[in-house]
Amino acid sequence: MSLIERIDKDQVAYIKFTSPERLNALSDEMISVLQAQFDSLASEKNIRVVVLSGSGKAFCAGHDLKQMSCYRQAKDGGASYYKDLFDRCARMMISILQLPQPVIAQVHGIATAAGCQLVASCDLAVAETEAKFGVNGVNIGLFCSTPMVALSRNVPAKKAFEMLTTGQFIDAKKAESLGLINTVVSRDKLEEKTQELANTIASKLSSAVMIGKKAFYEQLMMPMDRAYSFTGDVMVRNMLLRDTEEGIAAFLEKRKPNWQND
Image 1 (cartoon, one colour):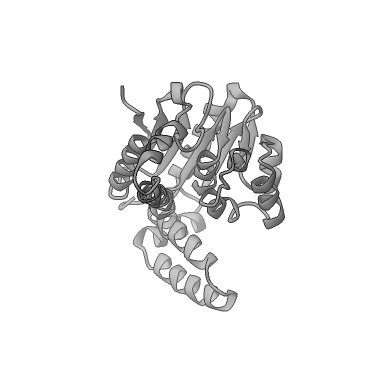
Image 2 (cartoon, one colour):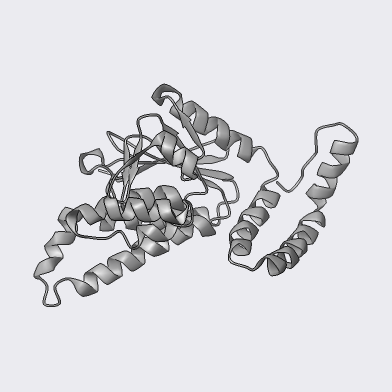
């Protein structure tokens, strides 16, 4: 059985996790197939937006603990395997940020531990009202240190630390208020709302969105004066695009732009 299902529609790639019996856990195999998809999408110019969703009861329950426990019998207690696992997972998460296309998480059920990390790693997230989010590894004695990297870049520090140390879940409304997700909708509207957001972004000049996404994450790591200098250069490069010139002309002439290279 395939671990994911991909459907491309209107220049949007919809990727669904199809391992509901394991709550779409990030097993070795799941990480591998997702990494392969992201590696491919990086060069697929016909795709403008990516949507990640889960099947069954959950979006993603994090790492596959049953699979991980098998390696405790190794001579090193599993240390080399665990280091490799977390490195591969981190590379997969970083690949989402490095994709030229915006990535939207469509969340239902639970998104816990590395599953919550996955939501935090996406550029945007839409969740249904009953969705719950947690970095609850501390409940079994495993602090969610790698998930906290993405979480702490989405959620205010004290709230992120509270989630990490208490292991408590937050509901969708709380996740929205903290900035972990963008929008909360009823379950029956989840797919529709996510598709609407994806189509809106896909309708924009893709070269501008791609330039902007890359610059967005790069400037976040800079002091303000350097960020302004850097983004000024980015806007110059954007302004010089033929399609941007056409977009401005179309706006001034009150007509639809005739983008040629998009």
